Length: 252
Ligand code: NDP
Image 1 (cartoon, rainbow, N blue to C red):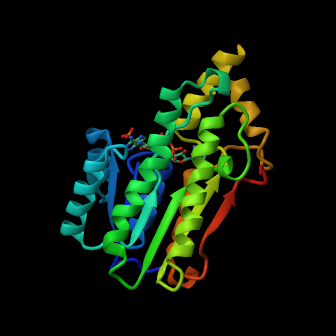
Image 2 (image 1 turned 90 degrees about the vertical axis):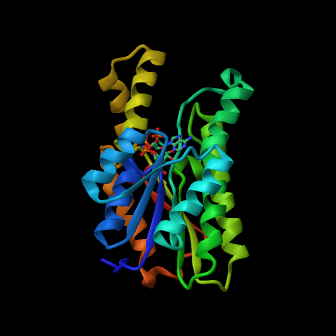
């Protein structure tokens, strides 16, 4: 395990699912971890349970992102590990996608990541080590049926990461995206309910459709994504840059 004891990490959406697994793993490696989200109570619970620093911040609100990340830097020093994880997922085919829905997905998954990474880079850029990790999806590297807005947002995130990896070449900061398939979290459980209602099938049948796409025949665990994030934070991984790391059990 790398020693992250001198590092300040910030994980958006860090009170639940994949974000919480990453935050816990980085904290176990010694990092001071700021977790953010909109639900103050859930953040406080996760903070108390795992020794994380909770901060209420809606990633779609530019002023909130600017002021809160500046406050986190003032409290715990430069952000050297930025995990842009906050996201929402809902499948809707294109003809049912109105502009409000499209913008809602983009505002969280893409604008939110852009604002978070931009504000973290202000302090990270002054230091000799930096890791920016975006939680994209296999929907960032191939199409996800019935979810064109989500697919576009996750492709966009990879574009942002690749662009930044070019802009910062020669600097001690790396930019990578993790691209998981179905992970057993609230997002997936909500989608199982939605699919079963839409298709008129039982929830266990909807789950079966997802599971069948994974070569191991199961949903992934959040810890599997966290393990990849930890590996990227290792100083020995400093030459891995501008990559989309597929964590899909062979699905993609
Ligand atoms: P969760 O629903 O558990 O996590 C989503 C997190 O994002 C929540 O903690 C939520 O916190 C936060 N969030 C959502 N909107 C906002 C917002 N406007 N401002 C701040 N925080 C926000 O699901 P996952 O852990 O699965 O999702 C994490 C990421 O992983 C997402 O980007 C998702 O697209 C991606 N992903 C998930 C996969 C899966 O199968 N589960 C597969 C591939 C990618 P709060 O509600 O408190 O704001």
